[in-house]
Picture 1 (cartoon, rainbow, N blue to C red):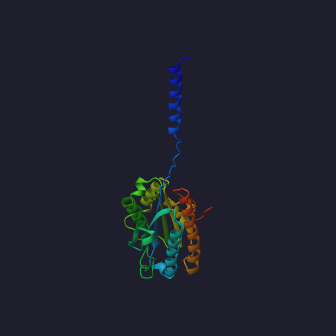
Picture 2: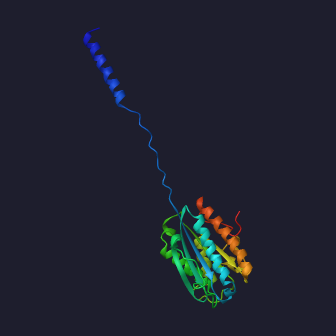
Picture 3: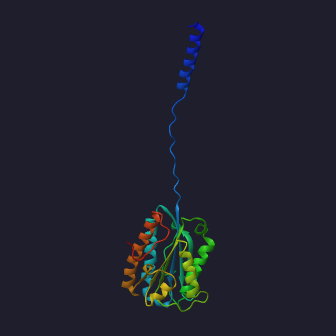
Length: 244
């Protein structure tokens, strides 16, 4: 074999060896998974008509204990709270506040008097949330919980009727991202179900000190179960007052 051919073959082998040394195996890059935070918007709508005065302190405790439970159990969520109170007028104690900015309800800020405009309070809460909370429109993983507490029959609303409010509630429930609940005393709760709030999301309490304490314990458990459902990605719950 000619000498120059041997030289050529050796040169090719040397180039191949250098190329193999130069090419180092690449390590697979770790893929960072970004978990989108869950936005949860909870609104308490609390009766402060005159009949609630006999359970004033217990109602304050009822609201504050639920807020404390939310603060303790929602570490993996971004939660904002609103508190609406109503007699013949609708008052906003605070709206869409982050958990760190909340102040407890007190005897100074909760002074029951007057009659009961529950329909107007619920209508006000829903429409304001619609108008001012962009995530409820843009984020399909955002969810809203409406907690209504009243010890008497609606008798003072001027803007909303049961029929108009029922249509709004059903429209929101159809999105599968709104949960409406009602805790009531001294009234026919079948009327509340006619407003579009499912039976499992409606419960009763005895309107005295002991009765409200029992209702508070039940409501704290229901709130805890709702937040657990949100943790696993659920945006609407059924049987709020009868969690599995």
